[in-house]
Length: 209
Image 1 (tube, rainbow, N blue to C red):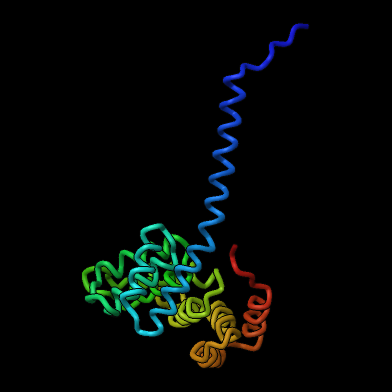
Image 2 (cartoon, rainbow, N blue to C red):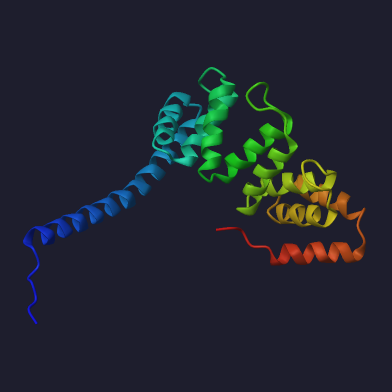
């Protein structure tokens, strides 16, 4: 049986593809600590009231697709921190961050739908509950607390005291005082069996990866 030797050009192409793949992986890995450092610089500047530096850092990260940078940039536009208040830009960047998986942004977007943000975000309890859930399932205490309240009052979801208690209990376990108080209020409307079931659900709950 005669075996045809490999074409040298094919070998070179495969080698070049491997080299570029390795370079791409190295660049991606190298970008993570750089992005983290830039974000830390932005946070430090923001906390010191140096909004110009914070805005520059967050905007650069946001335009690179960094969810944390997108969220903080959206917050700056929302609060008017060092920039003119711009509800449209705030909604744009907070939504981008939420869609890229930022739990804090998902909760914030839920709040925007919960209360309504003028013409940019109409009040929509179902949409609010949906975004709260995304944040809650990642372990975000505010998202858990807000989702628990939605279940408690039947806003955007069917009223369900057991699920309300579960989510509020999870948030309370992270130190959320409002959730603790709301959980105790919900518990007054529940039977001992329902409370036991809610507590079991909370013990078994694990955040989504």
